[in-house]
Length: 325
Image (cartoon, rainbow, N blue to C red; front, side):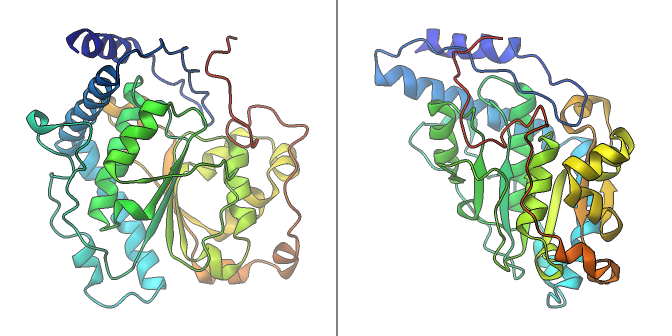
């Protein structure tokens, strides 16, 4: 068991950070060595849980977490007012944060489910997370997962009301996510998830541009968009980096919604620069959405990316972990 823990630690330390770009590729998984004993698997699961616990402690006491939380709070305050949330609900949602969403390090066990001490807030938010990456081996992905867990607790979103998907998840990572209590999606939705009139936070850092475009298409109405918050790549940054012709041709829903949203950038600190760079919180004020032309809402053609590259998790297929470049 000690050997398995050492192996997991070595792979964690050797993981390379993502490149600074809006749709960064994630490293492909190395072919996993066959496991002979279930005990080895359980030991690896415990190692990953301890790493998550350690990352959560570091993130929680960082200046970045408090600043990022303030940014999210500013956005959600306006968003919840738009949803006509009862007076006082914000103080309930952004009240006391207890750093006990994960068990004490000495008590970590593969079959133990961390306590969930907070109840659903009055706004009944749900959460969907796409493209978190291989958090078992990559410190960047693990920090992004840690941020998600703290955010769920802060917003009083039960972990069972958070759906997570990445086609590169290993069986070990799926096991860890199940232990953490979030809901792992079994199929690639390609970002085409309708919120079904339920206020939803989408947490999708460094995902491919087409994924955001698909999400907008699946919720292309004033009513649906006004109930969404997207934490992910800066839409303003996409507008600045892409030629207008390319943006309107390949990602028309992003291009059309730029005048119908408000965006708050995440703070930048040296400690988490490579993890949360180019990240913003987006929400869609009803007043801005209603000012868009009628023609914009009538156009609802499903996106087609035949001429696009670097779509990441858009295509409904999984990548062979043993493949090489």
